[in-house]
Length: 237
Image 1 (cartoon, rainbow, N blue to C red):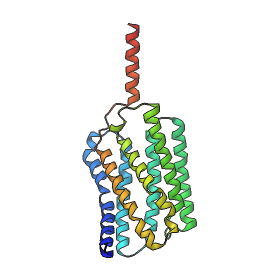
Image 2: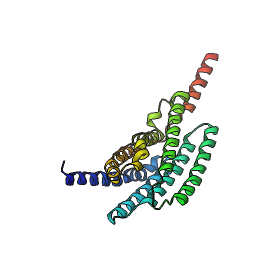
Image 3: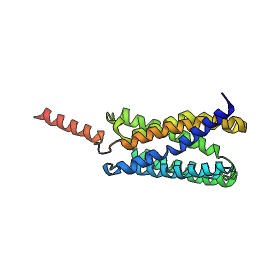
C-alpha cells in the first residue's frame, strides 16, 4: 500500500476513535430521563472528560507537540472513575473496601510517578499497566458475582454489563501493546499504536449500547427472593 494512503488511513482511524467517543455522552444526555441508574453518571463524566482531553490531544498533534501531560491525566481520571464505578456495582462490602483502598492508592501512586518521572514529558507506562491489571481483575470478579453467585439472568439488559465488557475488551486488546510500546522505536510505536484506536472504537460501540439500556429492571437478587418467598408460602398452604 502506498505510504500516503497508509498515513491517510491512520489519520482516519485516529479521528474516528476520538470523535466517536462523544456518542455515548450524547446518548446518555438523550436517554437519561428514562434512567435511574446513578452508576452511569460516573461513566458519563469519565467519557466527557476523556473526549475533551482527546480533542486537546488532537490540537497538540496538529502543533507537532507532545501530549504526555493530558494523556497521563486521562489515565488518572479513568482509574479513579472506574474504581468508583466498580465500587457502586459490587455487592460485597469487603470488595467495596478493597476497591476504595485501590482507588486511593491509584491517586497516590500517580502523583508520585508524575512528579518523579516527569509526567509532562513521558508516558506513565507502569501506572497504565497496574491500572489495566486492576480493572481486568475487577471485571472478572463482576462476571463471577453476577453470573455464578447471583445467577443474574437479566445481566445482558444491564448497562453495567456493557460498560464492564467495553473496558475488559479494550484492556484485553491493548494490554501487551502498552506493555511493549516503550521498547519499540518511534516509527514502530506510531505503526502499532493504530491498534489502540481500533479498540477505542470498539469500546465506544459497547459503551453506546450501555447508554441505550433501560435501568429500571428489578434486581435479580430481589426477584429470586420473591420467587423463593412465593414458593415457600405455596409449600405451607
